[in-house]
Length: 310
Image (tube, one colour):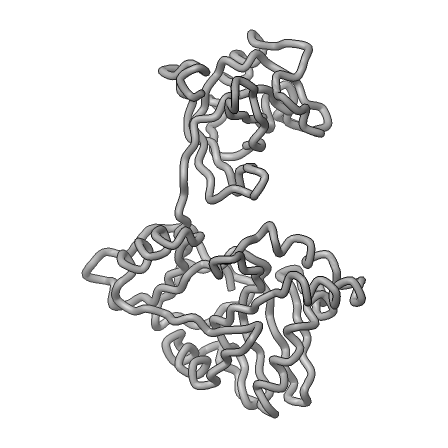
């Protein structure tokens, strides 16, 4: 079951929703047949069990109770917050169990549990969320590499403010009476990301394909550091067709032959422009290298010159 982007419920409807902290990691369904084993599957239904050997002990913690659980695999930073960049080296190791075992010692994963769809021989798919959540909490699954964070009912605005204060990705709101619908992006689950914005200088672009040929498919963005333009990532979503055409005209007039960034990004088909156009871009967080994560176009900033965002 997947969440739909949305906004906080009206104050008079808050009591109908539970708020869970949104973890930035790899979604996984856990199949526990009750014999001391488990299978982890990704959203694409790939078997990722060998990639996370430190999670195998969860089967013992559950005892002989067969279950199917829903959760998010994360890697935690020094402050205990999910850090997607730390998790990335672990995500491709399903075919390398020896390397996965080494990284499990140096960079352990943590499983955040938030739903139960099957338990003790009984399907809970048609059971309301509030009852499924109560069943999950009764399992008391809290261990060295897994946890069941609290769900807060009736205080979604305060919960969202708390995620911002602690630099977390955001919230997932779940309607208390909602059933579990596998594979469906449901409006009974609402995700709200804590979005930040940055004024970024456009240093290049990559042409689109098909009907977008000749138009920008992505813009290459930078920030000034010590007088040099430092690459901070690309953005390819969020604009209208009219904005795309306008940008194509502006980029054409600013075309140059050399890369304006202090270090040329390895991007096939990149075209370079004079770094004089300023954009405002939304994003969720940054990598340790300063690259934008989940960027989305907001608007062009003709009121700003590049030196204004030094």
